Image 1 (cartoon, rainbow, N blue to C red):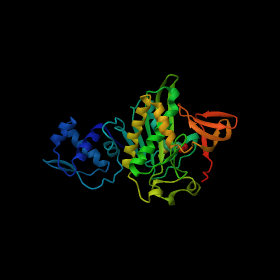
Image 2: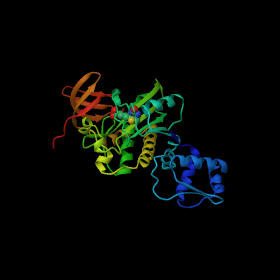
Image 3: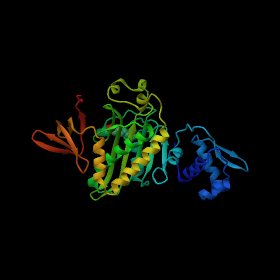
Image 4: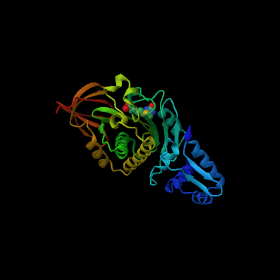
Length: 332
Ligand code: BTN
């Protein structure tokens, strides 16, 4: 297990701002306000994350040039823009049952807003409605703990905000625009690239925490995709024909999610819902709704101000807060 922290983030940022340049430990100690001894310890810890830092006695430290290949929590943290307070505390696991279960344990123990848990694979990854989530190496599996200051009645909007954030992060890192399927699947030509599981603990008047779990098929080649998933799933590697930098993608997701949740807290729900609706391919489509009430077929026409799906039936309109949606094939 590897962990980032504030000191390592700060130190790495300083080294990244001056690549190939020697910075004395006195200067680093001054800037980070910690002792030279603590700088040495932090450098050792960064090296154990695979970050190549050279130490020259009496002269100082420098980040060795060249692309840093390592998938390291401190590197993810250092790549998050300064305005974002999230992602200081990132835990990277080689494997785990489910990052979601792991994160919820820490959320119950009061870990701070914006604490992140990532794994390079999962043994028992979980999707919505208790389905399994295929989690082989090469994917990105992350759960982010947030303590949003919004009314429990707006909970569903967290799901929508998360989908928008993931879409934006993917656009920034790959230049690809994904469609959103209500409530929060990301699709490429109707095939699923990523899914989001948002779970919350709350009282009638307050949300204690929400854990937003994202599973993204990133560097998974077609040959590793099980045949039963191939007809409905896709990975970034399959679309782009190359691998994608997991570090940059993870940093961008954390930053985008912080931005969207902040917007939600600022009460601008209308803007969020309109932005979501403009990327939501479920709207104006014939859909099959699988909910606790059974299976129904109708026309998805809108997203309500609470983030519910509004569906038109011959004799009435219905809104759904939670359901599975199947899109009817598009006819051109
Ligand atoms: C879905 O579309 O059904 C949601 C899938 C969510 C999967 C992610 S992977 C990270 C986190 N850990 C889990 O066990 N599930 C979520």
